[in-house]
Length: 167
Image (tube, rainbow, N blue to C red; front, top):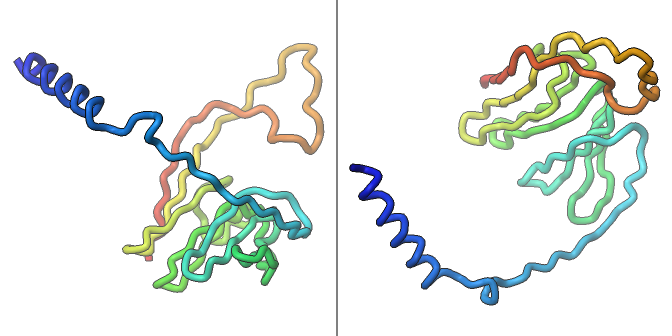
């Protein structure tokens, strides 16, 4: 019975949206200005994070986190000794910043955690990281992976960890 009532309602809403909704010709095209800045610096590159009140952009470089003025591209700082850094997140009101440093596990969470976010109301930090089992052996006669490129063969996901760092 629910299906018979729902189908006519959905059809009517679809018809009304098609009648009064925007058409492709009415949609406006957005344009963007792209600026590039050579910020130099050592190390690889990974994630960027923006601290919204200052407009500063934090660029992870593997062993350190560069701080860049978002509006000008000027490097204004460098946070050293963050081995294995990937992501960053901020709780401005609590005056906390978090980075995922897989190289030292300063706050033990999950090895290899990369992504992080902070809830601006609770100031809790959230991470997600799958845990993998052993990698399968290479196929007979398969060439060895090139050194220094990628992470190599990975095992199956055996757990999916959602981590909360509470304030």
